[in-house]
Length: 186
Image (tube, rainbow, N blue to C red; front, side, top):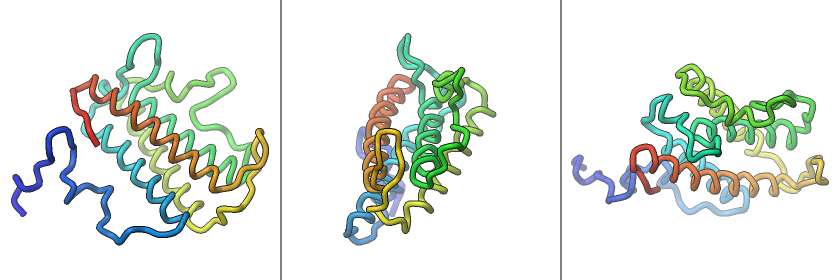
């Protein structure tokens, strides 16, 4: 296929034939496969929305007084993955929280500064936590109950919540990216 044939349609970032979210596999069946595939696709979408930006662009705040930035979202989603997989599903509530202390509960966003080392560490944390979470969710019983301050949750509740979390933050990321360089879509 020639390069022009793979030029994405206006407003899209990747041509559907080479979009990493489309595996070319048959339609998935079953609750686990479908939910995990939605989660996989949203994780890839989020990563695509941050692609190609430098530390300053990733750390750029949206609108005052908000502290939201793409880098803050990377750190936030690493914290989310860590908290749900390790602290809740694996029942390790005494683990130190990622990007959160008693003194700095919003460290995920407040610490998202335009420093290449901070960016590198954030992506490494996010990828490590995603990889760990994928291994946890691959075979765990979706009916299994997990302790939570609001009462026990089924693993399936956690997974559906993660899909919702990524969907919401992909919307935020789309708007943040558009403010940075006008890029929209997918």
